[in-house]
Image (cartoon, rainbow, N blue to C red):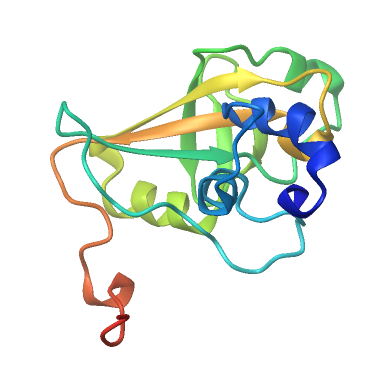
Length: 156
């Protein structure tokens, strides 16, 4: 992870909407999902509502569909993203633009009417895997409250 290589941090963290001086590895991994695309686990932050009672998740789109560069270049900050199975679909152009993390797919599948996904940041100058940074807002339900997402035992 870049936290082990501090020279990478100032340019990598802003692409995740984080301050360049961050030293919190959990905040980094919760937004990046891990350093390598080959990581097989999805990491998300502790589930807690904000002051408005909404739950927010921040994530990068994976495996961007860059067959046509114009598809990705059409994506801009604030654009709505629709989720169909694993695909992130740019709402206004209806083009598939990438793959969502598994935990985002689970939220979209279980409560499609209660989520809103938008592009927070497009990193044109950054690495391909940090190109499109998104947020998902949940309202009207508590995400990941089913037994399959709860700890197996006492973690203390």
